Length: 259
Image 1: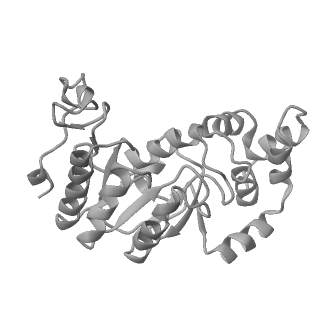
Image 2 (image 1 turned 90 degrees about the vertical axis):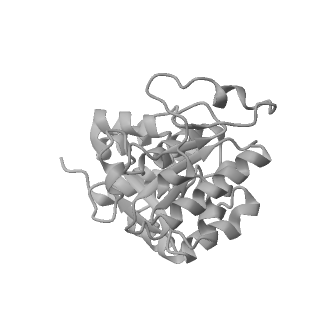
């Protein structure tokens, strides 16, 4: 049986962990997954209730909130994300994904002044090279990268681990608005109303890491995965960033690499 767009939207509003949602889709199909959730007594009442609301009512609420929705296979679904086997079936977004190639910049929230400045410099340099930035909207490296991008009139995409109507962190609400106003987007696989919880953020990082079309340009400041930017040796967070890259990982590119 073909999965309908209405059923796909209803399942997205269950706000399940992405792995769980994919398991149910693979096992039962979307319609079957909805029936499974409605029938199980050990499923949270909030999840069962969310799946019973009509898709048309959901669309009306999304429009009223200024939010858009795209589904895997749609023309406006991010091309490089759609190639992943675990790509989100449904994305909620505000703004536009744009038509420039993207570079992923992610890193620690507890970054040093050096790391924050480095991320901002990357964001500005990437914009000046004609690329955009995709990252989270967290404190630290993510926010700094977007601010650097905006300072150079660039286009950015921020991937959230909560609903689009949740300002998290609260102080980055103006930054989110600026990204949209500058031609970028705020995107989440979680529906409006979804609160930020720790387990939701790693899947969001998966999106930001994989919306970049270039294998050479995702970078991380002051962290230990993917490409790493060296930190000052006397900073306590520097050990992993300054240690030799592990197999398959590289240090972050220099600023001239974006030219």
